[in-house]
Structure formats: C-alpha cells, structure tokens
Length: 171
Image (cartoon, rainbow, N blue to C red; front, side, top):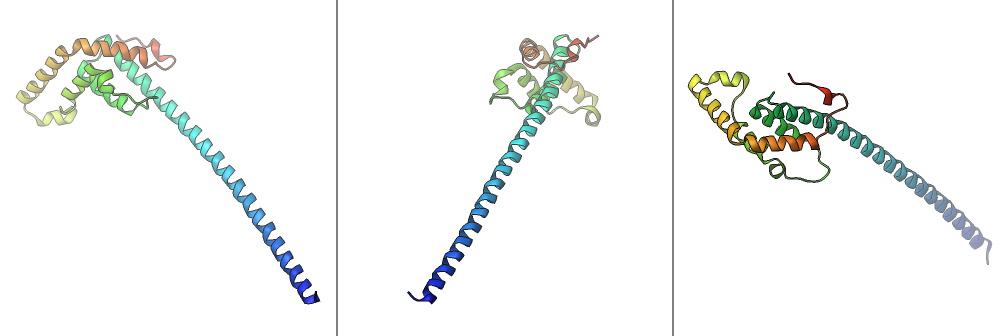
C-alpha cells in the first residue's frame, strides 16, 4: 500500500473520530438540557399546584362563610346565592362536577337574580319596576328556601373554613 493511501486513511479516521467525539458532546448537552427542562417544568407545575391550592383555600373560606351567614339568616338568599355561585364557578374542583345538580337550590336562585340590576344600575329603573323585581326575588327566595337551606348545609360541610375563621360569629 502506498503512503498516500495510508495517510488518507489515517486522516479520514482522525476526522471520523473527531466528528464522533463532537456528536457525543452534543448528545450529552442535549440530554442535560432535556433534564433541566423537565426539572423546570416540574418546579413550575408544583408552583402552579401550590397557587391553585392557596386560591382554592381562599375561595372555600369565602364560600363557607357566606353559606354559614345564609344558614343563620344573616344574608339574604338571593345575595348569598349570587355570590356563592360566582365563587364556586371559579373554584378548581379535584374532579369534574355539575354544580347545577350538586346545588340545585342555589343554581335556581342564581338564575332568577343573575340578570337583576344591583347598586347604581337599580337607580335607572322606576320604583314600580324595582318593586316588581324585588317581588320576583322575594317569591323565588320563598319558593327555593328549603333547597337553598339544604345546599348551604352541604356547602358548610364540603367547603372548609380557613383556620380561625370558623369562630366568626354573625350577629
């Protein structure tokens, strides 16, 4: 074999070895980057989970307190149902659930009052129209009172109050 062929084979082998070494480095860096990304994603998921738990705890406390106030007749059913329904729709439940089935009384009352004007919006209506809306609201509160009371009792058990807030007394 001639020297030129041997030199060409040697140079070719060195080039192939260099490229293989470079490819190995790239694969190692890629693997390290994948691990770092997976770690960051796990940390982000944990932060998201903690944030969701913290938010749920605040929502559960508010829902619990409103339900207690309604059960103790310290909050009108119409106002309480409106507030509870909005809070429960923001609550992140562990499993998917149909709130309309779980809390039918609150849902029915919410449907009656959700379109009724409040605060400054009420001032735009005549006294006769406001009385008509109030009468419809009072009638709905009376018609759904047993279901709402049962839903409040269920909520008080299911949604736990934050530590310290269970001692709040409604006068």
